[in-house]
Amino acid sequence: MTKTLTHNIEISVECKYWPEQSNPRENHYFFVYYITIENKGNQTVQLIKRHWEIFDSINEVRTVDGVGVVGETPILEPGEKFEYNSGCNLVSEIGYMQGYYTMKKMSDGSEIEVTIPQFNLIVPAKLN
Image 1 (cartoon, rainbow, N blue to C red):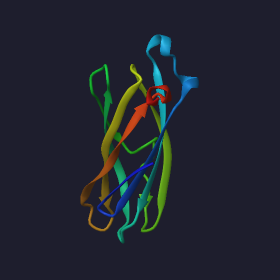
Image 2: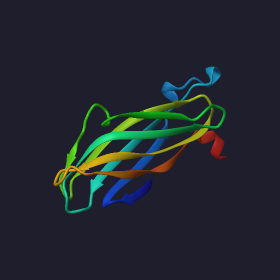
Image 3: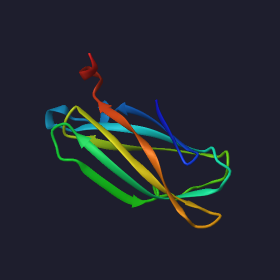
């Protein structure tokens, strides 16, 4: 598990290779990642946007920007957590993702960027 803490928001990430959704013969490797967002501060925040950079060892870097995550823009009171999972495909067996969430402080409407830690996307056989 990889973690980071930015502006009192902790982001934890776990990633797994998903062989059932992969097809190595066609250079299609699928990974599922599980994210926990925990508000460790004393202000209520809302996740409003996401920004991802996806690095594939034999392909161009992809950038993904969008509203919320998995169709939601969760509000986190102090001490609350939000968990979700999503997926990513690569054309190679090795890559990584990183990014940030844009969060809005509910008290004054100001926005902060919360770092999503870099995490590896690696087919397990490549680790041997």
